[in-house]
Length: 193
Length: 251
Image (tube, rainbow over the protein chains, first blue to last red):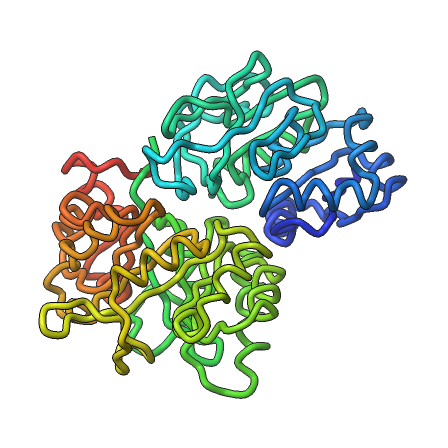
């Protein structure tokens, strides 16, 4: 099995690579279209600002490729946000895989949300063996609005989608690679899809 | 619901935990990775590594340490100490650090905060502020609290938040080492004037101090070193104590 982490210069890729290593999987970092297409599993990470990350995707033409992938794809944090229709951050048009919008938390709460929050209403095999209200580590100022593609929900300011799924595309707002044993289990579940 | 965070802080010198850490069950008490793994297993929510070495090789040693921690520890960690440029930050994040903390370099050149926030995102930029009271006024200090500046704590906190800090790590030099509790009045004021998370540091002596800093100090996270290193407070018992006091924590 070949797992590729899309390397487009946005984010903490090392942590994901190490988390997969702890599961015995040696992932390949790549921005090569053919290599990504041929992979059995694709991880789409991202940390930082939406519009500049999107710009980097366009520069490597990955914006056209990612939505056409047919193997399981997991977007993490900003990766998930970029898979949505749009983001309020930098007025960014997303990849449009998930039919929802990304907007900023209101100033009634501290922004960014940093720390461990619970995930609820878990659906599907990505969360197999994960208990309701399990804690996940999150760091973000923008969130995906709830939609019918939601497979996990969290609450901060309001209730929002902390995981989404459409067909072979999965997205998680939290960092499974930094979320202790439960996070590792979610990565393991993804690798088994 | 978002939980309050408990953060052990490890002082690092030349890639090793600074003497004084007393863990009998450790094969090597000086190995930061071993210690980090134990804290992660015990339920620490994050870790902070503060590098206090002053050698020529410090950058390389720290980078290797960050790689080792990132490969073996599955909770987030922050690295601080002597970070003064975007290159420093880039190197540490590439090695797997989740956040970096900057202190003196930000006071000397505040634009650094803007530069780091726009390049790496504000979520990974922690600004550490050391302050103590001089004639009733909280004043920012440098060099581990030894050198006073002209800057007032609350003005500086507002400025760093506006410049793009993702979090503030506030250490009260008046409380640090006293074991008399955190500087909750100043902490609560910080939470009122800025809308980013505040990490309380300095003064932890018993479990009640943690409840107090989350309730009275409105802190989002609490950092401590010696009470954890010397096993005066165990993280599992602390978290149960907090939960019994109605504080939302990850257990």
